[in-house]
Image 1 (cartoon, rainbow, N blue to C red):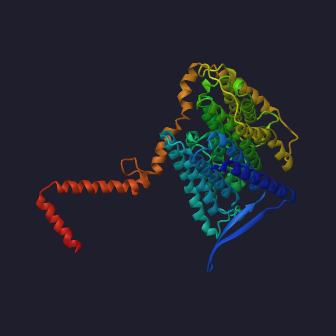
Image 2: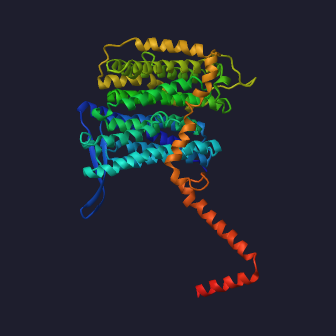
Image 3: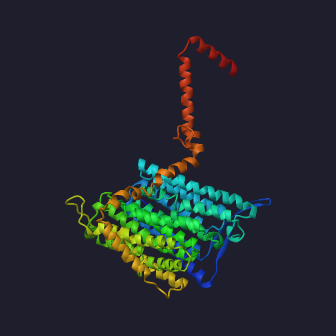
Length: 551
């Protein structure tokens, strides 16, 4: 019997819809129009429920990028996850459900239907993180799910609050909302986008398979919060120094911590956190279009970076430690080239995709009246990006291999190479294409970013051989993300204290669900057994009492 290969069909379908929505975006920009569609779900007397779809240039372009990256990830997973088992089909349909949840969130101008996609992302991401069924995966999935559920509190309060406005179509009321409602939305987005103090779940989510990491950390789960804030943008409320400081500290902390990590996927995850901090910072500086531009260009090269890292892990017997990865470029020349290309785009090297968005954000931030400390943190974080990137390239490409002796591998998986080829192509050209289409003024290019890149390269080269006292003393601080795991435990315990009644180990679902029922059944059984072991008269007497009650 011929096995039906779902991966190929779903990959081509996602790719087709990606190009369809890109042409829709071109049409929206050319004719300066948007489409608002209503679908009546139910009508009962004067009560009716509509599902609203908003397709403008922002949503159609973002859907196009999400679907294109998803199609490349599906093609890549055909080799990476294997197509010979039912487990691989389960993985594929989980990924499709994940993408569908993201699309539902993007196209909706209604806060209630946004919650549908928002919760779908949280629940399906839990299923994907625990895919390998190990204890590490379960713990990572638990912290991912619980942190994202914290963010849902703010979204639910906002939905309840918006009842007083007569509609959940937030796009019509952005100038009328109370500022406290915006703060609820911002806090919800901070949990989804892993800003301080909710950053600890993002590196933990690396327990998922690498194709899932490429999808989650480039264009879907972590960018959902940034996209929601772009939709809810209100310049009077967003001009807030507290949120700006938190996002800048996220960028600084993650960039510094990445210089101390040796796990390949964790380094890339922390670089994602750094770029999310940059997007949030530009958003709170008021540069909403530049934040969206960087969101799209970052999605391209970050997915490429993860897929190339997945190929390294795939060929090196699931090894993720960069200290054992030397001279990979000798064995995997094409993949190593794409890996270095995405690293350069991440640094903002002229004239790759990441340069256009990052340079514009840095230029515009110089015109914003920030204090000296804010400017130092902002530009130092950008320089540290180059530092951990050079460190990563040094350990994986330049030094001699420290893996097993007589170990040989070579590139043979054609479809995996095809996926990273298309992503590498767009990592180079996507930034300038969007720049030309949207006609952003790009006449005055400053070379300050180039100076920062070379300074970061210099710092990275020195940090590879850094054995001084300060490195040893700060190693534990930065390897543990400023000990965020430890003190966030008390934060979670405070929020979930109502569910930690029984020995501080069961949450509400277990306490009132299967485990709680089994606990009470076991207690009742033990009680009856103890009762029956007593005098035979007592047992017969109670039997007679229950018989009379039943009769």
